[in-house]
Length: 66
Image (tube, rainbow, N blue to C red; front, side):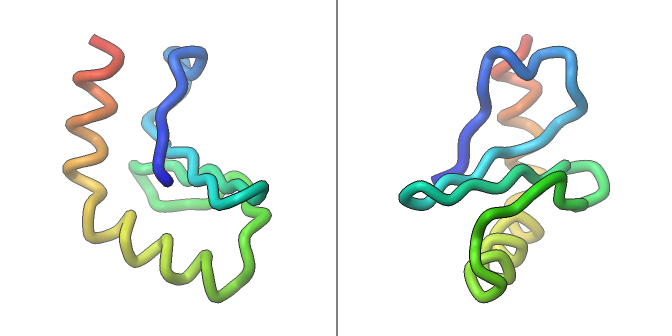
């Protein structure tokens, strides 16, 4: 599941990923990973999704923090 948190207002656009108890944080502008506790296989899948949906996520980030 992909999320934004209201407490992240002052940070550059990013998305939090959560699967069960495992999490990751991905910066949307340069697609870099801040941290990841997902398996390598899961992280590859997540990165493909984020790459494909990045522009949509950026728009959602901007709408969320407007």
